[in-house]
Length: 439
Ligand SMILES: NC(=O)c1ccc[n+]([C@@H]2O[C@H](COP(=O)([O-])OP(=O)(O)OC[C@H]3O[C@@H](n4cnc5c(N)ncnc54)[C@H](O)[C@@H]3O)[C@@H](O)[C@H]2O)c1
Ligand SMILES: O=c1ccn([C@@H]2O[C@H](COP(=O)(O)OP(=O)(O)O[C@H]3O[C@H](CO)[C@@H](O)[C@H](O)[C@H]3O)[C@@H](O)[C@H]2O)c(=O)[nH]1
Image (tube, rainbow, N blue to C red; front, side, top):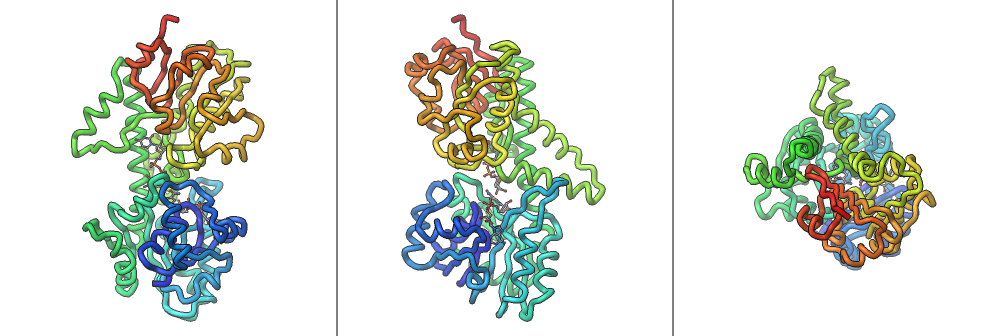
Protein backbone atom coordinates (compact mmCIF):
# COMPACT_ATOMS: atom_id res chain seq x y z
CA UNK A 1 0.00 0.00 0.00
CA UNK A 2 0.99 3.61 -0.44
CA UNK A 3 0.89 5.39 2.90
CA UNK A 4 1.49 8.97 4.02
CA UNK A 5 2.28 9.81 7.65
CA UNK A 6 1.80 13.47 8.53
CA UNK A 7 3.88 14.42 11.58
CA UNK A 8 7.23 12.66 11.95
CA UNK A 9 7.78 12.73 15.72
CA UNK A 10 7.97 9.75 18.10
CA UNK A 11 4.73 8.25 16.83
CA UNK A 12 4.89 9.27 13.17
CA UNK A 13 8.45 8.10 12.61
CA UNK A 14 7.84 4.76 14.31
CA UNK A 15 4.53 4.29 12.44
CA UNK A 16 6.10 5.16 9.10
CA UNK A 17 9.19 3.03 9.62
CA UNK A 18 7.25 -0.01 10.85
CA UNK A 19 4.73 0.12 8.01
CA UNK A 20 7.63 0.39 5.55
CA UNK A 21 9.10 -2.69 7.24
CA UNK A 22 5.90 -4.62 6.44
CA UNK A 23 6.37 -3.80 2.75
CA UNK A 24 4.41 -0.60 2.24
CA UNK A 25 5.60 2.51 0.40
CA UNK A 26 5.71 5.22 3.06
CA UNK A 27 6.21 8.95 2.79
CA UNK A 28 6.54 10.88 6.06
CA UNK A 29 5.63 14.56 6.01
CA UNK A 30 6.75 17.15 8.57
CA UNK A 31 6.72 20.93 8.61
CA UNK A 32 9.97 20.99 10.55
CA UNK A 33 12.48 21.51 7.74
CA UNK A 34 15.50 20.73 9.91
CA UNK A 35 13.96 17.45 11.00
CA UNK A 36 13.21 16.42 7.41
CA UNK A 37 16.69 17.43 6.30
CA UNK A 38 18.20 15.28 9.05
CA UNK A 39 16.01 12.32 8.12
CA UNK A 40 16.92 12.71 4.45
CA UNK A 41 20.57 12.68 5.50
CA UNK A 42 20.13 9.46 7.44
CA UNK A 43 20.04 11.08 10.89
CA UNK A 44 17.32 9.85 13.26
CA UNK A 45 16.29 12.84 15.40
CA UNK A 46 15.13 10.80 18.42
CA UNK A 47 16.66 8.07 20.53
CA UNK A 48 14.45 4.99 20.20
CA UNK A 49 16.09 1.57 20.61
CA UNK A 50 15.82 -0.69 17.56
CA UNK A 51 14.45 2.00 15.26
CA UNK A 52 17.77 2.52 13.45
CA UNK A 53 17.96 -0.98 11.96
CA UNK A 54 14.48 -0.74 10.44
CA UNK A 55 14.97 2.89 9.43
CA UNK A 56 18.19 2.32 7.47
CA UNK A 57 16.92 -0.87 5.83
CA UNK A 58 13.74 0.74 4.56
CA UNK A 59 15.35 4.01 3.49
CA UNK A 60 17.97 2.03 1.58
CA UNK A 61 15.35 -0.14 -0.11
CA UNK A 62 13.37 2.95 -1.12
CA UNK A 63 10.23 2.22 0.93
CA UNK A 64 10.65 5.11 3.41
CA UNK A 65 10.89 8.73 2.29
CA UNK A 66 10.60 12.17 3.88
CA UNK A 67 9.29 15.48 2.68
CA UNK A 68 8.05 18.84 3.92
CA UNK A 69 5.43 19.00 1.18
CA UNK A 70 1.97 17.72 2.12
CA UNK A 71 0.80 17.61 -1.49
CA UNK A 72 3.84 15.54 -2.58
CA UNK A 73 3.61 13.33 0.49
CA UNK A 74 0.00 12.29 0.01
CA UNK A 75 0.16 11.78 -3.78
CA UNK A 76 -1.38 8.36 -4.52
CA UNK A 77 -1.70 7.47 -0.82
CA UNK A 78 -4.47 5.01 0.10
CA UNK A 79 -4.06 5.82 3.79
CA UNK A 80 -3.01 9.10 5.41
CA UNK A 81 -2.01 8.90 9.08
CA UNK A 82 -2.19 12.03 11.22
CA UNK A 83 0.51 11.69 13.90
CA UNK A 84 0.45 15.32 14.94
CA UNK A 85 0.91 16.91 18.37
CA UNK A 86 -2.12 17.37 20.63
CA UNK A 87 -0.56 19.37 23.47
CA UNK A 88 -2.57 20.76 26.36
CA UNK A 89 -4.24 24.04 25.52
CA UNK A 90 -4.45 26.84 28.06
CA UNK A 91 -7.43 25.24 29.82
CA UNK A 92 -5.90 21.75 29.90
CA UNK A 93 -7.96 20.32 27.04
CA UNK A 94 -6.18 18.83 24.03
CA UNK A 95 -5.28 21.52 21.51
CA UNK A 96 -6.53 20.36 18.10
CA UNK A 97 -5.04 23.18 16.05
CA UNK A 98 -2.34 21.00 14.41
CA UNK A 99 -4.80 18.25 13.47
CA UNK A 100 -7.53 20.55 12.16
CA UNK A 101 -5.04 22.66 10.20
CA UNK A 102 -3.80 19.58 8.34
CA UNK A 103 -7.41 18.36 7.88
CA UNK A 104 -8.29 21.70 6.23
CA UNK A 105 -5.15 21.56 4.08
CA UNK A 106 -6.00 18.02 2.94
CA UNK A 107 -9.51 18.79 1.64
CA UNK A 108 -8.61 20.57 -1.60
CA UNK A 109 -5.65 18.33 -2.47
CA UNK A 110 -7.25 14.88 -2.22
CA UNK A 111 -7.60 13.32 -5.66
CA UNK A 112 -8.94 9.81 -4.97
CA UNK A 113 -10.64 7.79 -2.19
CA UNK A 114 -8.45 7.77 0.89
CA UNK A 115 -8.68 6.69 4.52
CA UNK A 116 -7.55 9.49 6.84
CA UNK A 117 -6.47 8.00 10.16
CA UNK A 118 -6.25 9.89 13.46
CA UNK A 119 -3.26 8.33 15.18
CA UNK A 120 -2.81 11.22 17.57
CA UNK A 121 -4.48 11.05 20.96
CA UNK A 122 -7.60 13.15 20.48
CA UNK A 123 -10.72 13.87 22.52
CA UNK A 124 -14.07 12.30 21.79
CA UNK A 125 -15.67 13.94 18.77
CA UNK A 126 -12.43 14.78 16.95
CA UNK A 127 -13.00 12.35 14.06
CA UNK A 128 -16.23 14.23 13.30
CA UNK A 129 -14.37 17.55 13.36
CA UNK A 130 -11.61 16.21 11.10
CA UNK A 131 -14.26 14.88 8.70
CA UNK A 132 -15.99 18.26 8.60
CA UNK A 133 -12.74 20.15 7.99
CA UNK A 134 -11.74 17.88 5.11
CA UNK A 135 -15.24 17.83 3.64
CA UNK A 136 -15.34 21.63 3.39
CA UNK A 137 -13.19 21.55 0.23
CA UNK A 138 -12.94 17.87 -0.72
CA UNK A 139 -14.05 16.76 -4.20
CA UNK A 140 -13.57 13.03 -3.59
CA UNK A 141 -14.92 10.34 -1.28
CA UNK A 142 -12.92 9.73 1.93
CA UNK A 143 -13.26 8.11 5.36
CA UNK A 144 -11.93 9.28 8.71
CA UNK A 145 -10.88 6.54 11.11
CA UNK A 146 -9.78 6.77 14.73
CA UNK A 147 -6.82 4.44 15.33
CA UNK A 148 -5.21 5.42 18.65
CA UNK A 149 -1.61 4.41 19.25
CA UNK A 150 -0.57 2.55 22.41
CA UNK A 151 3.20 2.37 21.92
CA UNK A 152 5.52 3.23 24.78
CA UNK A 153 8.67 5.24 24.19
CA UNK A 154 11.77 3.13 24.67
CA UNK A 155 10.05 -0.02 23.39
CA UNK A 156 8.11 1.68 20.62
CA UNK A 157 9.22 -0.56 17.76
CA UNK A 158 8.35 -3.74 19.63
CA UNK A 159 5.02 -2.31 20.79
CA UNK A 160 4.19 -1.26 17.23
CA UNK A 161 5.26 -4.48 15.53
CA UNK A 162 3.57 -6.72 18.13
CA UNK A 163 0.66 -4.73 19.53
CA UNK A 164 -1.44 -6.25 22.33
CA UNK A 165 -4.39 -5.07 20.26
CA UNK A 166 -5.25 -2.64 17.50
CA UNK A 167 -8.23 -0.37 18.10
CA UNK A 168 -10.02 0.95 15.04
CA UNK A 169 -12.96 3.29 15.21
CA UNK A 170 -15.00 3.42 12.02
CA UNK A 171 -18.41 2.51 10.70
CA UNK A 172 -17.23 2.31 7.09
CA UNK A 173 -16.78 -1.22 5.69
CA UNK A 174 -14.47 0.12 3.00
CA UNK A 175 -12.20 1.72 5.62
CA UNK A 176 -12.37 -1.43 7.79
CA UNK A 177 -11.07 -3.55 4.95
CA UNK A 178 -8.19 -1.14 4.20
CA UNK A 179 -7.20 -1.05 7.89
CA UNK A 180 -7.46 -4.84 8.23
CA UNK A 181 -5.14 -5.31 5.26
CA UNK A 182 -2.63 -2.82 6.64
CA UNK A 183 -2.49 -4.32 10.15
CA UNK A 184 -2.69 -8.01 9.15
CA UNK A 185 1.13 -8.53 9.26
CA UNK A 186 1.27 -7.14 12.82
CA UNK A 187 -1.43 -9.34 14.34
CA UNK A 188 -0.50 -12.72 12.89
CA UNK A 189 -0.16 -14.19 16.40
CA UNK A 190 -3.85 -13.63 16.97
CA UNK A 191 -3.83 -10.37 18.88
CA UNK A 192 -7.16 -8.74 18.12
CA UNK A 193 -8.04 -5.88 15.82
CA UNK A 194 -10.97 -4.41 17.71
CA UNK A 195 -13.47 -2.45 15.66
CA UNK A 196 -15.79 0.08 17.25
CA UNK A 197 -17.27 3.48 16.51
CA UNK A 198 -14.98 6.52 16.32
CA UNK A 199 -16.05 8.03 19.66
CA UNK A 200 -15.43 4.77 21.53
CA UNK A 201 -11.99 4.40 19.93
CA UNK A 202 -11.08 7.94 20.96
CA UNK A 203 -12.31 7.27 24.50
CA UNK A 204 -10.46 3.91 24.67
CA UNK A 205 -7.11 5.68 24.35
CA UNK A 206 -7.83 8.10 27.20
CA UNK A 207 -9.30 5.32 29.35
CA UNK A 208 -6.15 3.21 28.87
CA UNK A 209 -3.75 6.01 29.82
CA UNK A 210 -5.90 7.27 32.69
CA UNK A 211 -6.26 3.74 34.06
CA UNK A 212 -2.51 3.12 33.96
CA UNK A 213 -1.80 6.53 35.53
CA UNK A 214 -4.33 5.67 38.25
CA UNK A 215 -2.71 2.28 38.84
CA UNK A 216 0.70 3.93 39.33
CA UNK A 217 -0.79 6.64 41.53
CA UNK A 218 -2.58 4.10 43.69
CA UNK A 219 0.74 2.36 44.29
CA UNK A 220 2.40 5.69 45.06
CA UNK A 221 -0.20 6.32 47.75
CA UNK A 222 0.26 2.80 49.11
CA UNK A 223 4.00 3.58 49.16
CA UNK A 224 3.45 6.77 51.12
CA UNK A 225 1.37 4.85 53.63
CA UNK A 226 3.97 2.04 53.78
CA UNK A 227 6.55 4.57 54.93
CA UNK A 228 4.27 5.56 57.80
CA UNK A 229 3.21 2.07 58.92
CA UNK A 230 6.62 0.42 58.49
CA UNK A 231 5.86 -1.77 55.46
CA UNK A 232 7.82 -2.26 52.21
CA UNK A 233 6.01 -1.29 49.00
CA UNK A 234 8.11 -3.64 46.88
CA UNK A 235 6.81 -6.57 48.91
CA UNK A 236 3.27 -5.26 48.53
CA UNK A 237 3.82 -5.03 44.76
CA UNK A 238 4.89 -8.66 44.60
CA UNK A 239 2.10 -9.65 46.96
CA UNK A 240 -0.67 -8.11 44.90
CA UNK A 241 0.85 -8.25 41.40
CA UNK A 242 0.73 -12.04 41.44
CA UNK A 243 -3.07 -11.82 41.57
CA UNK A 244 -3.91 -12.17 37.89
CA UNK A 245 -6.83 -9.79 38.32
CA UNK A 246 -4.35 -7.07 39.29
CA UNK A 247 -1.35 -8.00 37.11
CA UNK A 248 2.36 -7.37 37.65
CA UNK A 249 2.86 -4.36 35.42
CA UNK A 250 2.64 -0.63 36.19
CA UNK A 251 2.78 -1.25 39.94
CA UNK A 252 6.17 0.34 40.51
CA UNK A 253 6.06 3.14 43.06
CA UNK A 254 8.30 6.12 42.46
CA UNK A 255 8.46 9.86 42.03
CA UNK A 256 5.36 9.96 39.89
CA UNK A 257 4.51 9.45 36.26
CA UNK A 258 5.83 11.86 33.63
CA UNK A 259 6.29 11.86 29.88
CA UNK A 260 4.47 13.36 26.97
CA UNK A 261 1.32 11.30 27.45
CA UNK A 262 0.04 10.44 30.93
CA UNK A 263 0.10 13.97 32.39
CA UNK A 264 -1.53 15.62 29.38
CA UNK A 265 -4.00 12.81 28.68
CA UNK A 266 -5.24 12.53 32.27
CA UNK A 267 -5.70 16.29 32.26
CA UNK A 268 -7.51 16.24 28.91
CA UNK A 269 -9.87 13.46 30.04
CA UNK A 270 -10.64 15.43 33.20
CA UNK A 271 -11.39 18.42 30.98
CA UNK A 272 -13.71 16.35 28.79
CA UNK A 273 -15.54 15.21 31.94
CA UNK A 274 -15.92 18.84 33.02
CA UNK A 275 -17.28 19.81 29.60
CA UNK A 276 -19.93 17.13 29.96
CA UNK A 277 -20.66 18.24 33.57
CA UNK A 278 -19.36 14.98 35.00
CA UNK A 279 -17.40 15.19 38.24
CA UNK A 280 -14.63 12.62 37.62
CA UNK A 281 -13.32 12.56 41.20
CA UNK A 282 -10.73 9.80 40.75
CA UNK A 283 -8.94 11.67 37.96
CA UNK A 284 -8.75 14.88 39.95
CA UNK A 285 -7.10 12.97 42.83
CA UNK A 286 -4.69 11.22 40.47
CA UNK A 287 -3.45 14.59 39.20
CA UNK A 288 -3.12 16.07 42.69
CA UNK A 289 -1.27 13.05 44.09
CA UNK A 290 1.08 12.84 41.11
CA UNK A 291 2.05 16.49 41.38
CA UNK A 292 2.92 16.04 45.05
CA UNK A 293 4.73 12.77 44.41
CA UNK A 294 7.19 14.30 41.96
CA UNK A 295 9.08 16.24 44.65
CA UNK A 296 8.52 13.70 47.38
CA UNK A 297 12.23 13.31 48.00
CA UNK A 298 12.71 16.95 48.96
CA UNK A 299 11.46 16.57 52.57
CA UNK A 300 13.72 13.52 52.89
CA UNK A 301 16.68 15.55 51.64
CA UNK A 302 15.85 18.14 54.29
CA UNK A 303 15.45 15.41 56.88
CA UNK A 304 19.11 14.57 56.28
CA UNK A 305 20.67 17.98 55.59
CA UNK A 306 18.34 20.26 57.54
CA UNK A 307 16.21 22.99 56.00
CA UNK A 308 19.07 25.03 54.58
CA UNK A 309 20.31 23.52 51.32
CA UNK A 310 22.19 26.64 50.19
CA UNK A 311 25.56 25.81 48.70
CA UNK A 312 25.00 22.02 48.84
CA UNK A 313 25.76 20.16 45.62
CA UNK A 314 23.54 17.32 44.46
CA UNK A 315 24.49 14.75 41.85
CA UNK A 316 21.48 13.65 39.82
CA UNK A 317 21.49 10.35 37.94
CA UNK A 318 18.76 10.24 35.31
CA UNK A 319 16.94 13.10 33.60
CA UNK A 320 14.67 11.36 31.08
CA UNK A 321 11.10 10.69 32.24
CA UNK A 322 11.91 6.98 32.11
CA UNK A 323 14.79 4.77 30.90
CA UNK A 324 15.54 4.05 27.22
CA UNK A 325 14.41 7.45 25.99
CA UNK A 326 15.88 10.93 25.57
CA UNK A 327 12.43 12.44 26.17
CA UNK A 328 12.29 14.86 29.10
CA UNK A 329 8.72 16.09 28.67
CA UNK A 330 7.15 16.31 32.17
CA UNK A 331 10.14 14.46 33.60
CA UNK A 332 10.09 14.47 37.43
CA UNK A 333 13.85 15.20 37.32
CA UNK A 334 13.08 18.69 36.03
CA UNK A 335 10.69 19.45 38.92
CA UNK A 336 13.34 18.31 41.39
CA UNK A 337 16.11 20.32 39.77
CA UNK A 338 13.92 23.44 39.85
CA UNK A 339 13.05 22.81 43.52
CA UNK A 340 16.72 22.32 44.47
CA UNK A 341 17.84 25.42 42.58
CA UNK A 342 15.09 27.42 44.30
CA UNK A 343 16.57 26.30 47.64
CA UNK A 344 19.96 27.67 46.59
CA UNK A 345 21.50 24.22 45.99
CA UNK A 346 23.73 23.30 43.05
CA UNK A 347 23.10 20.39 40.69
CA UNK A 348 25.41 18.25 38.57
CA UNK A 349 23.48 15.89 36.32
CA UNK A 350 24.13 12.84 34.21
CA UNK A 351 21.83 10.93 31.87
CA UNK A 352 22.94 8.50 29.15
CA UNK A 353 20.64 10.01 26.48
CA UNK A 354 18.75 13.09 27.66
CA UNK A 355 21.58 15.57 28.41
CA UNK A 356 21.25 17.58 25.18
CA UNK A 357 17.50 18.03 25.66
CA UNK A 358 18.02 19.25 29.24
CA UNK A 359 20.87 21.53 28.20
CA UNK A 360 18.50 23.17 25.68
CA UNK A 361 16.09 24.03 28.49
CA UNK A 362 18.26 24.66 31.55
CA UNK A 363 21.47 25.87 29.91
CA UNK A 364 24.05 26.88 32.49
CA UNK A 365 21.72 26.66 35.50
CA UNK A 366 23.16 23.22 36.25
CA UNK A 367 26.41 21.37 35.54
CA UNK A 368 26.54 18.42 33.16
CA UNK A 369 28.81 15.46 33.83
CA UNK A 370 30.28 13.20 31.15
CA UNK A 371 29.82 10.05 33.18
CA UNK A 372 27.72 8.94 36.11
CA UNK A 373 30.83 8.98 38.32
CA UNK A 374 31.95 12.45 37.21
CA UNK A 375 28.60 13.72 38.48
CA UNK A 376 29.50 12.51 42.00
CA UNK A 377 32.77 14.41 42.22
CA UNK A 378 32.53 16.59 45.34
CA UNK A 379 28.75 16.15 45.56
CA UNK A 380 27.07 16.17 48.96
CA UNK A 381 24.62 13.43 47.96
CA UNK A 382 23.34 11.38 45.04
CA UNK A 383 19.72 11.58 43.85
CA UNK A 384 18.38 8.94 41.44
CA UNK A 385 15.55 10.12 39.20
CA UNK A 386 15.49 7.57 36.36
CA UNK A 387 16.14 3.82 36.69
CA UNK A 388 18.56 3.39 33.78
CA UNK A 389 20.07 -0.14 34.03
CA UNK A 390 23.50 1.52 34.16
CA UNK A 391 22.70 2.80 37.66
CA UNK A 392 21.65 -0.58 39.07
CA UNK A 393 25.07 -2.10 39.70
CA UNK A 394 27.53 0.77 40.00
CA UNK A 395 31.04 0.62 41.37
CA UNK A 396 30.23 1.54 44.97
CA UNK A 397 33.89 1.72 45.97
CA UNK A 398 34.47 4.36 43.34
CA UNK A 399 31.35 6.17 44.53
CA UNK A 400 32.58 6.15 48.12
CA UNK A 401 35.73 7.98 47.07
CA UNK A 402 33.84 10.67 45.17
CA UNK A 403 30.77 11.46 47.26
CA UNK A 404 31.24 13.75 50.26
CA UNK A 405 28.64 11.82 52.25
CA UNK A 406 27.49 8.23 51.82
CA UNK A 407 23.89 9.23 51.22
CA UNK A 408 21.53 8.38 48.36
CA UNK A 409 17.99 9.59 47.70
CA UNK A 410 16.41 7.12 45.30
CA UNK A 411 13.17 8.03 43.52
CA UNK A 412 12.95 4.67 41.71
CA UNK A 413 13.86 2.05 44.36
CA UNK A 414 16.88 0.87 42.43
CA UNK A 415 18.80 -0.74 45.34
CA UNK A 416 18.03 -3.33 47.99
CA UNK A 417 17.77 -1.94 51.52
CA UNK A 418 20.03 -4.71 52.92
CA UNK A 419 22.81 -3.92 50.42
CA UNK A 420 22.71 -0.26 51.32
CA UNK A 421 22.79 -1.03 55.04
CA UNK A 422 25.73 -3.46 54.62
CA UNK A 423 27.68 -0.82 52.71
CA UNK A 424 27.06 1.80 55.35
CA UNK A 425 24.95 4.09 53.21
CA UNK A 426 22.17 6.33 54.40
CA UNK A 427 19.51 5.52 51.87
CA UNK A 428 16.10 7.07 51.36
CA UNK A 429 13.73 5.51 48.81
CA UNK A 430 10.00 5.34 48.07
CA UNK A 431 7.59 3.34 50.22
CA UNK A 432 10.37 1.70 52.21
CA UNK A 433 11.97 2.54 55.54
CA UNK A 434 14.98 4.83 55.33
CA UNK A 435 18.32 3.13 56.00
CA UNK A 436 20.33 5.33 58.34
CA UNK A 437 24.03 4.57 58.62
CA UNK A 438 25.96 5.30 61.81
CA UNK A 439 28.88 7.01 59.96
N1 LIG B 1 5.04 9.85 22.21
C1 LIG B 1 4.35 8.77 22.50
O1 LIG B 1 4.83 7.85 23.14
C2 LIG B 1 2.91 8.64 22.04
C3 LIG B 1 2.30 7.37 22.08
C4 LIG B 1 0.97 7.25 21.68
C5 LIG B 1 0.28 8.37 21.22
N2 LIG B 1 0.90 9.59 21.19
C6 LIG B 1 0.15 10.71 20.64
O2 LIG B 1 0.57 10.87 19.28
C7 LIG B 1 0.58 12.26 18.92
C8 LIG B 1 1.97 12.66 18.45
O3 LIG B 1 2.86 12.52 19.52
P1 LIG B 1 4.45 12.56 19.32
O4 LIG B 1 5.04 12.24 20.64
O5 LIG B 1 4.82 11.77 18.13
O6 LIG B 1 4.65 14.12 19.00
P2 LIG B 1 5.97 14.86 18.47
O7 LIG B 1 5.89 16.24 18.98
O8 LIG B 1 7.17 14.02 18.76
O9 LIG B 1 5.79 14.86 16.87
C9 LIG B 1 4.83 15.60 16.18
C10 LIG B 1 5.41 16.06 14.85
O10 LIG B 1 4.37 16.73 14.09
C11 LIG B 1 5.01 17.75 13.33
N3 LIG B 1 4.01 18.71 12.84
C12 LIG B 1 3.36 19.71 13.49
N4 LIG B 1 2.51 20.35 12.65
C13 LIG B 1 2.64 19.76 11.44
C14 LIG B 1 2.03 19.96 10.18
N5 LIG B 1 1.14 20.93 9.98
N6 LIG B 1 2.40 19.18 9.16
C15 LIG B 1 3.33 18.19 9.34
N7 LIG B 1 3.93 17.95 10.51
C16 LIG B 1 3.60 18.72 11.55
C17 LIG B 1 6.01 18.34 14.31
O11 LIG B 1 7.01 19.08 13.61
C18 LIG B 1 6.56 17.05 14.97
O12 LIG B 1 7.69 16.54 14.27
C19 LIG B 1 0.09 13.00 20.16
O13 LIG B 1 -1.30 13.15 20.06
C20 LIG B 1 0.41 12.05 21.29
O14 LIG B 1 -0.44 12.23 22.39
C21 LIG B 1 2.19 9.74 21.58
O1 LIG C 1 5.04 0.98 37.25
C1 LIG C 1 5.26 2.07 36.73
C2 LIG C 1 5.23 2.27 35.33
C3 LIG C 1 5.49 3.56 34.83
N1 LIG C 1 5.76 4.58 35.67
C4 LIG C 1 6.00 5.94 35.12
O2 LIG C 1 4.94 6.25 34.22
C5 LIG C 1 5.41 7.11 33.19
C6 LIG C 1 4.98 6.59 31.83
O3 LIG C 1 5.64 5.38 31.55
P1 LIG C 1 5.29 4.50 30.25
O4 LIG C 1 3.85 4.25 30.24
O5 LIG C 1 6.19 3.33 30.24
O6 LIG C 1 5.76 5.49 29.11
P2 LIG C 1 5.07 6.25 27.87
O7 LIG C 1 6.03 6.14 26.75
O8 LIG C 1 4.66 7.60 28.36
O9 LIG C 1 3.78 5.39 27.46
C7 LIG C 1 2.45 5.69 27.89
O10 LIG C 1 1.88 6.73 27.13
C8 LIG C 1 1.84 6.44 25.71
C9 LIG C 1 1.31 7.70 25.02
O11 LIG C 1 -0.07 7.81 25.07
C10 LIG C 1 0.95 5.23 25.49
O12 LIG C 1 0.89 4.96 24.10
C11 LIG C 1 1.52 4.04 26.25
O13 LIG C 1 0.65 2.91 26.09
C12 LIG C 1 1.62 4.42 27.72
O14 LIG C 1 2.20 3.35 28.47
C13 LIG C 1 6.93 7.20 33.38
O15 LIG C 1 7.25 8.41 34.02
C14 LIG C 1 7.27 6.03 34.29
O16 LIG C 1 8.39 6.28 35.10
C15 LIG C 1 5.80 4.39 37.05
O17 LIG C 1 6.04 5.33 37.81
N2 LIG C 1 5.55 3.13 37.53
